[in-house]
Length: 516
Figure (cartoon, rainbow, N blue to C red):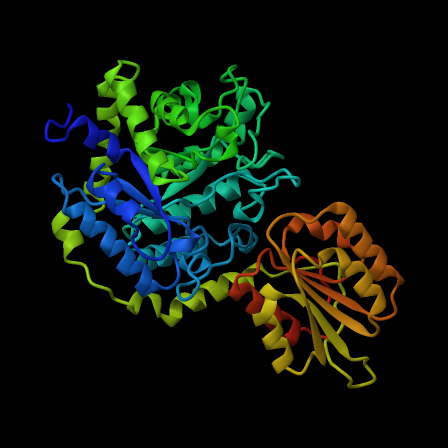
């Protein structure tokens, strides 16, 4: 049945999530909520400074929604894929990225990361998380998923992804498994172009779809459909987000998903290289999407996409029943998570969930379990004692916490900071020119160019003095640096930097690094 208390414009508004632009509520957001009854607001990086600021922003957004005729609270979403601290500039717990959690392999810690993220997100007014990534990253050339994935193994990804989902949703935060039907085995970034999965349906069934099936079994309430073409299932080569065979035929009907289907950002070039954003919104509704993530460029464009869907209904291209189906699901999830006017109105800021020492301890425990020593043995990091040559640290700006811990220990005599990515090309020459023992700490969240890694390896071969490499980046880089003791840390989250320093400083002379 439909919602007679909602007009067509209000029902269409519920299906749209727009972005706020900045740390305070904008006039554009006020208008979209008050006049066009937008159902959701996404908070990107420019909205997220510190916990109290985000709470004031989300409260202002919800006040606008509660003041409308229908008074329906908003979905307020964010990409807290590694905890609130991965996006907040200050405050919140920053967990190791998923690949590091995969290396730790601990389902309890994955669940705890979800639980803690839920408590902290709700404390600042975010009720919908576009996480976890359940893509299986089995393509070393993947330019976008990388360390956002739990790993290369379907069972590991399924097990840990489902644990995170339970952690979120059992503590009141809506989870989103993404990017259906699987963005891991691609070499194209859908922000820039349309990836194409050339697999047979049985291959998808046996591999890419496994974590999504498990997420559905775990009760996930939202799945994000990516901008990925699968010609074997939709010969039109449309992105899955705009494809009825993939969105409704595969996800809704074959896999039996009954929750919210969310599109990835509809301004991404995987869509807009072939469709206007207005046409993309219409096609996404026809495909079966419930929530359109309309990352528009302007207020005028936001109005334009809303009007495009309303016009499509009024001209009969989209049935109003199709709109009602999505609105029924949206309102059901809002009720399930307590997004009712009386509960949203009574909220006040409580910083306590964001200040619990045990949250940081759990993140550090995950970091310690993720430490992966490779290509040992590792020499003792002792500067200028027992005949050892002094150690110098070469690092990038994002590894400052690691550097502070190493310098305080007196293991490192001096350091040099390089800018990433601007000065990375000069690192091979810098390695050749530096004398003595070098500890190198580099962070990079995508695989580094293989020719650059080869030149680094050659420079290390030719220099006089030992080198130890701490890699806060992709595991796919490690095989190219196989002639140097390497501590693989996966990303630069603070707990991983602390865990790396602990491991190096308590290591015994010439300890092997065999990955154990």
